Length: 311
Image (cartoon, rainbow, N blue to C red; front, side, top):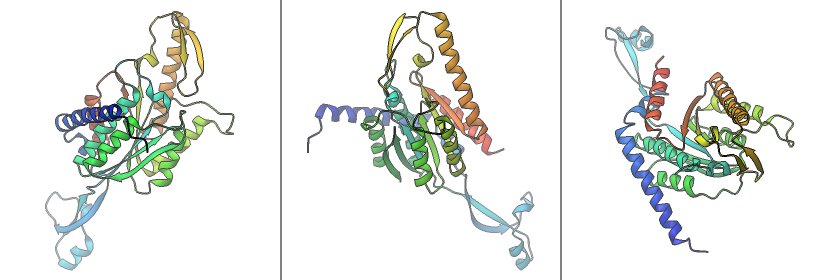
């Protein structure tokens, strides 16, 4: 067996260590309590009965015990303490793009680490699914620091065997394999092709069918990564653009105002339609960038989920 390159190994350890330190700091200083309030208590188990006290809900009275004891008793419940978190991450070749310091894949690793460290700090299990055109890696949910560090290494450095994106494969795997209800964070840039010559049904339609099925089984959150240069290009004249997944090269003129407007309008329209369709299905969307910190935005997102849960 070929020995791993020492420099590459050192790079793995350095990046993993950096993200681990940053994530632990953010979990302690920024997200303390936010994760728990957003997700804990989604299931409840019966614990015991006690005597009725003024102010208790009449609906919580246990009439069988009340009849036997001759005094009103109420049921008490405890929150389901252990949750299952699944990080489902799109590692197709479009994730290697990054116009500044960090690529989309590196930023997804940072978000994944933050969620994973939050989970284990609260005693929850966390698992990993990496997919591109097909499922590439699946680590079943488990606990512990070592498990989270392995998840982080896989997100950053696993060499995917396929280049293109097939979000439906990732969703189908979740629907078939994850039997227990989980909180699924589905991380991708969500660039969905409209159709394929190999399919009778529109790929986009299939995506919404699969994601609706996932939502019925799990608490699903879509985390969408983007790079600012994918949305608004500088005025730099003629540029050759290569599709990272297909290898197709096209030449575009970014100094042409009409082209720039048409491109940006198309992106904005797609994004509005995408977020509207998710909202219609009751799926939360968390949007983050390769160039800005997302810790405060994530805390606000968790806070909104807490409010929605308590309605």
